[in-house]
Image (cartoon, rainbow, N blue to C red):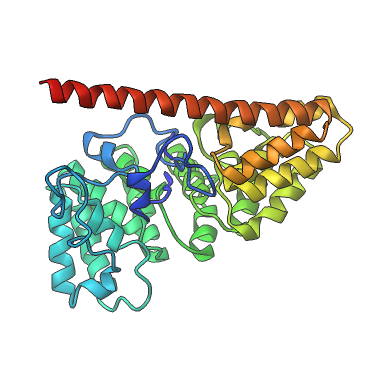
Length: 364
């Protein structure tokens, strides 16, 4: 599962993901946004580097040892970097040649103050549809539209999928659609395609909404899942409410869903845990006020997979274990603690192996 996917989750939204992304980097974090490629099979060669957290190692600004040179890296938005439509278009075309994620990052939701963006996006749409464009170029241009935050660009992607749904380009458009970033206007627009007869478009729309974080996105995912009548259909392919990483405003709604204690509650539990510490606290509060141990165990199915390491969470579960909790709470807390300890052991093994590798290089 992608992890922005994450997106994701998020699309290179921070270089910190590049330098520190391991089993302990959960937090509120966009785990792997787990929303991107889940249901569409393998990506094309050009899209294999499109996880959203991958920094292209062929870009300018790299030091000889492969680390980014922060003196050369420009993290300003595109509206501040480029003085004109011509400059921006030249940069985008150059970025498309080697799938330059740094250029993509500059165009993540550039905002309304990007005066040249409307003209640029119109040209990018034409470039994306150019029959002579390579698969990599189609993927790059379509991803640039998806991360723009602009509803009209999402419309262009969806129209492209609908116009020729059986082509390889349609698959590429759909994979880019999954990486969509935007506000509630985009979420509402995507919601109209969640029951589309085109399965590719349907799943991509669900994945795209999963990639958001608002309360509205959580509500739409939940309502759609209930309407479908299958709590696990989307979770099994790595999208939907169980893979949703919420904003703070969405937490109370998700906790309400867990308190319903129905067949969909386990998805809300997973989403809360995706958030991080505050979500973990909410889940334990629900468990502490329950007298149905059998249901609680079902509700916690696979929940442990949605926890990322945080020191606050580790302290919390140790305190819970010390307070002689109910068997279900005790087992869940112990599973979390065991998982953290296993992560520590694996990290230590990796460090030790790294030390041996350094020694081997010195010997050579």
